[in-house]
Image (cartoon, rainbow, N blue to C red; front, side):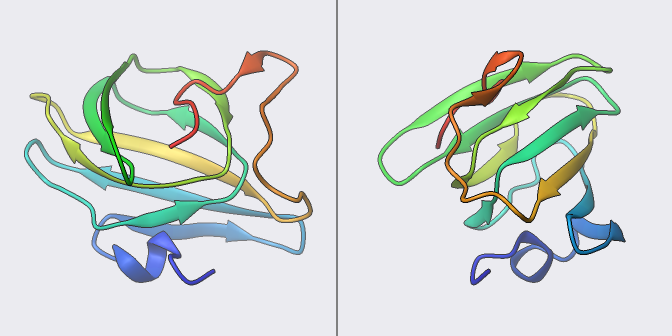
Amino acid sequence: MELDPVRTNPSHYRVVFENDRVRVLEYTDLPGERTTPHAHPDSVMYTLSSFRRRLYSADAHRDVEMVVGTTGWLPAQEHSGQNIGETETHVLFVELKDGAGGGAGGPAGPGILGPA
């Protein structure tokens, strides 16, 4: 993946597990910190902290607020982001390797962050 977040933002993303079906990333940042553009395949996200972020896509931005323990589907997308809250962001992403990407949502419905 050309916009692999581990390569584009190594101070924020790290691989904590990987096999032939999934890759698990841990993400952390501090208030005010930003990421550069990167891409995610279809993923499941689990929040380890409550946070507020601004996500930027090619033509728009949106603010999201997540509470600790939120688990949800993240459709494949490209974006950059900024921590606009007062707390650290701490998240796990379970990236799927065998899908075509761009899914509209899993059994729980549309993605919690929506498409970029």
